[in-house]
Length: 82
Image (tube, rainbow, N blue to C red; front, side, top):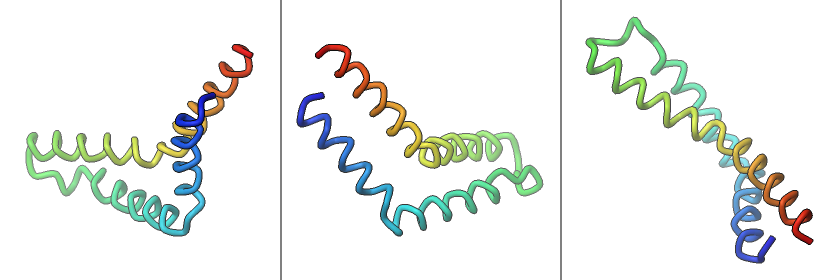
């Protein structure tokens, strides 16, 4: 793995261990529960808007797993190339 790619992943790993990241994830989780309420949906447009919000929140909530998985795959590919 080249140095630039390693630095990219290291920056994410440094972020994921901070209290701020954990706090943000908790806030997003709480928000997702409120946004996912069908009872609060006013109309179809609001439902699609909420669907978009949930899509973005799901990506952010899964970001740590996504980055770790991509890192492991990149490291494995790098080892195979050596």
